[in-house]
Length: 158
Image (cartoon, rainbow, N blue to C red):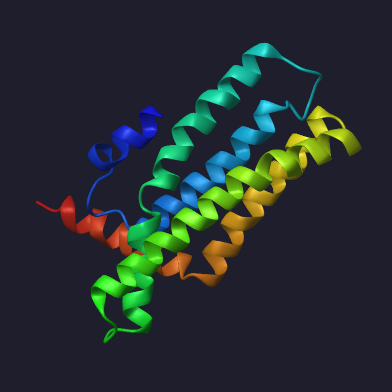
């Protein structure tokens, strides 16, 4: 929750939103691997690190989604009505957020019943990291990282 509150204040303006989403989605997948330690049986210290990392990664994943959706829709349909577009996108974001909150525990419970705790976390972590890679490949991730590097170098010139 702290990451959600601090995200607008700690993220520099020169960082592309897609870079945030891809980076923190990958970090969330890695933290899920630590949550159910993939290399040994349950280890409390590693699980706490995984929980802390997942908590820090969720804030930057929740906040900039709507802005990225609005930007992508504007690029694809520049002449659409702004108020109507924003209302539809907000409804879609809330619908899929609620759907994930409903189906997530069902999927986690099903995977836990079929496998064990470590394997369940490995499957979910792999899925999250593959979504990050897919988003990088399909949503112009390379260009976003490149633009962020250009913005960083322009910002740090004397």
